[in-house]
Image (cartoon, rainbow over all chains, first blue to last red; front, side, top):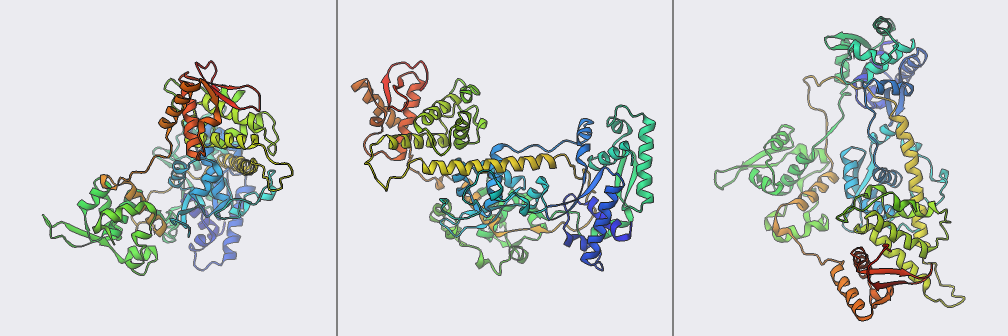
Length: 185
Length: 185
Length: 245
């Protein structure tokens, strides 16, 4: 491996989260973006072709080294690592609505789910999956919520663009993305 | 890499601590201790001879994959390891009270939050968000705290005047403004 | 109906299985799916009764969100029962808004399924478990944002332990009053139509309060709810109830 690839590999190992291209470039001020991309590619190839148990993944607008999925069962069975806990349906529904309608206020989420969401929303913020991204101009200037990079990371998505488009869903309806105080189509 | 080496690599990568030979053997009940030692050796050689930025290290508690020490400085300098941090809820609450009531003494903050704030207050001073701005005329002449220029900088505010006035905040604030003349910013 | 069989009410009548459904729309959609009903042509009378029975059976009859939906369904049911002039072009199907919400919710459901699938796949790939301990170096960059600060100001003020801040809000639901009204009607007549119980020009709060009162009285075995025909009116009668609703 060349020097830059080696450095990138070490940096990706040291960080507990995906690193963006911009962050990786900070490792070597002399390296161009193309250099960094090339070095990342060489790390990726090395893992893939050398039959490694880890791989380089493009996720959450950055890059991260993760173990290969086919090894998970054996590692869990050996009780060396636990799988992350699943979110409740209530939390997933709230997350789904925020993902598609962000920035979105609590009232709109409650309108769609038909229940109060205070507790669930607080949990999602505490877990770092959702965050306050601003305030609406509307009455009482309610807080607006959006998803975080950790949300993408835990779903293995490179960006929000990878979420299924609404017209790809089997339940066709007026676009959820059309943000408005009035939800009527 | 053979199957066992691949599995060892993934387990060593994902475990939160060094793994002993005994733990590694749990990954494959059919593997002998010699098999595991052999596979570990092949992982070690792979890292050393392939010019990787990581290495397999045998420490007192077991085996671990670590980044190579000579790369550590560059990674630290690029400040990639840490996630930018947010303040805890406790710190944020204390900061919010100080921002709106400054100059304010510790006792008053504690009265509002209903808990002791020594530790949190010290943290805010250490992080340069809050500082002692004077002494009260009251009994014991307690220290008074206020926010710093760094506080404004992190919020992107030019001056304290740009903090939204309390009466612009949500409806929940209204009664407070009514009962406490001393709460106005 | 399997929905009701899945849960039981505990002795106190307290909500025991709220987590079974993520909300009233979830329960409603489950009812509709189990019976393979066309979502755009919901037999409201039937579904409304099943919904009321289900929330009662699940011990959800004290959860405001479910009660609100129950009241909404009963209102639609009543609207559909009202005679309407022939060839009335302005007539709007009272179910339309409910159908829209159900479809929207179904879409959310589908997204949840997709997200859950992705999360499950991702859960099989582990990040590095051990990361280096912090050496001696400046603390990581701090994030501070105004929205969060403002939210915190809200939270602090809401949580302030000062009795001065208490504000008395008139309780919108008056279950006690509704209970007295229903009991008075019962004493007077021994049985009456559900709509009479709501009183003249009821507000949504009146409807919910009345519904809550009737369900509570039914639970205590003091009234019996009878529906003679599938699309008929619901009668409230004095006497023990063998089967709730």
